[in-house]
Length: 409
Picture (cartoon, rainbow, N blue to C red):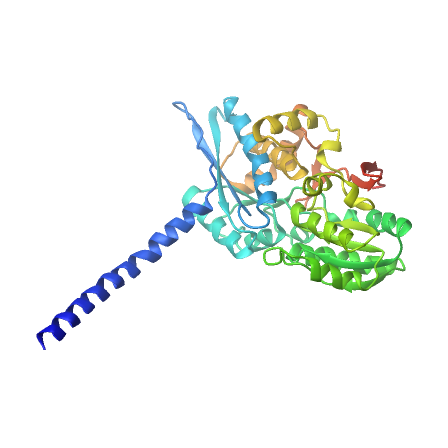
């Protein structure tokens, strides 16, 4: 009987230890998870009398879109490092340096919203960048409320500015400008039957809902319409096979560059000889890194790669980026670099580094003040709705080479 009692006591004691462990573990796991979500960004060295402005970033730094997210963040890092290494910037006699605080949202809008609230609470960030439309829309739900902040929206989705959110700046050109030239090129070269296999993200859905109706208006036929969840799907054989059974002339593909390239490559392996309309998130030069050359993408039309652009600051930026990161930059890095300079100049013009509404009111002055040598892209103006206006440039792959194309705007 005594043995039974002792055994029961030991079992109860063990249970209590386990229970205690279970109570502690969630918080320790959460801390670990939060720690993993942070990117390795270093706080600037601040001299006596200097102050710091925190700039937020939330984007995909893990998972299938990590390649894309890292390159958006790299553009910001390069600008922030340059500004700080040059002594920071002055507003009303006070010198400031920038501290870039970045969090991983895994390309999930709900994580973007959670990260934004954390950045506001812990870092008091007047500006938060994110490189996907789902994240932008998630933050637009509350960024004009009590704890206001300006969204640096790296998405070509026109809906983010059409929403009427006064504290959103859309950084790249709206994708609706690509619809007509992309359609004309592919119909002229290959034919009028299209199969859609874009990313399953909200951005992919919006692109599809814009492109396919226009394709049909031009006399085209949509023979297949599906999507790919790049966060889950890694083998595209069945998906591509189903699309090709409909005998399309053109495939509409897109999302992050790496998986988009794999979709195109799978189509070629299955015998597809038509063209590709490539959503602007995927970049032709980055897709090339997957296959080793452009031959796979003959007949593809997409946005002009940064390395084939000729803005005043393009060459210098490419050289700096290659020195720092050991690879060729894409447009997402270039646009973030310019946008950071524009926002910094807007703070100077506003005489304010804290109030997002005041900073937003001076963004045009900020754009006008960006030094020519920093113009990786020349951003002409910001619209009342908050969209940056840049000249539209597109390119196609012909005979294994990228060919720039003129677009009437």
